[in-house]
Length: 538
Image (cartoon, rainbow, N blue to C red; front, side, top):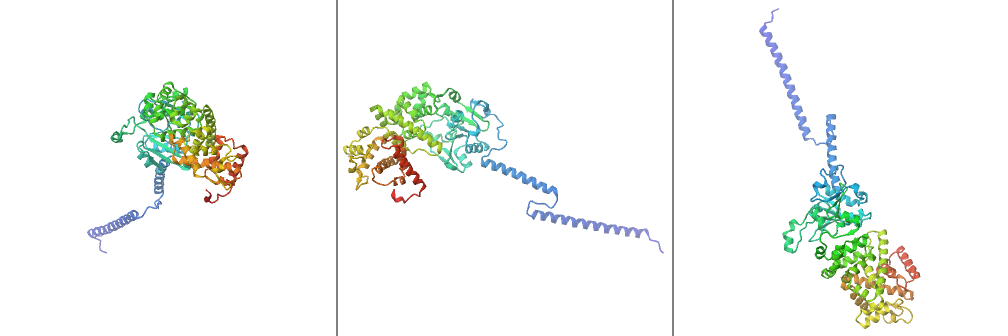
């Protein structure tokens, strides 16, 4: 057997190694191609939230999901207005607020967040979460401090009206010169939100146009622009503190109503402030500070320069406040009454008994208003009922008749306004009855309109309210006629029946005995239980 030559053997070994290297290279290339294909497939494949690669990928997906849910929860909490966990300011109020206010911490005042309306808290939290200052201001802070239930919650903020509108889709911008935001909630609830006002006074349209970009201020300027010290307090919902720029806390402690600034200057700027001073003193039971009261007694004639619409609105606020019996003597003593209600003041000066009757009617109105508020805080007494009670309920008929210019109107009204217009010997048949049934003639309506115009035109009562008062007076005659046997009791189906019954109740008509009241209230209960008949009867 021939020996193998070394050269040839080495050559064969090298060939084998080359073959092995080529195989390994091909395998590596195939593996790399497969991995590239898998990577490209993964890139093209949509993410389903699941992973086939093991626990590490699944935990990563879960972490990403949890982080997204946290971010979404934070966004939803800011949108819904709920308070996040960490919402306290990093800086103190003294560092954020302008000026040097008195900051009363939570342990030094009686206001609790649980007594604040939930919707108001939502508005405050959303504004704060979006980087704006927002405080409860005005009568809400005052009433909470005194332990009373506020009528409403007003909010002052550093956000402009447009920024507030972008944060609250249920809001609306109102006003032209001073823009406000009304935020609407279920049940007819409205939260008024105002941007901090500056201390600039726009004296003309040109000045207002020039300063339109700089009409907003801060908390300090907004507090000093308000009328009374007790109504210029801010409550911060994040630190639970009261912010006082004008000494309102001290006035609340000593029970005083005081103007902010120089009283005579503030009265001349806006004479309606004199009415507000006396109203707040009567409602809260405080005394008016000496300088403030002197300014009110010195400038009552300035009310002549105010629009009748504003004075009429202030009069309705007094009658609906539940404290009209307490405020009317303040108006008379300070001299405001003859400018606020000239016709009523004229009757009071002419007959001392009118004043006593007026006080008794005011007491009954306050009881009626308070009773209505305890049942439903959103329901208010119609202005027509209040005005008819004050002007027609306590003034003697002979005094009212003397105000009519026409002798014919005097005769008609004397017949109609008597306590028993359908009694025997009455001349009401000439004007009201036709074949035993009541038919209101044009002469009767003219007499009513003449009197109502004499009473209510000087105080700015709207035409609509005067017409409704006329309807109540005519319905009053029909209610008297029922007892005379003229017609049935379908009067309860008329729209003005409930208000007319309240009018008779407030004015204590002598012809309406308890028996008559029981009859009409029983008819009203029957009407509520039955379906409303055809509207044609109206």
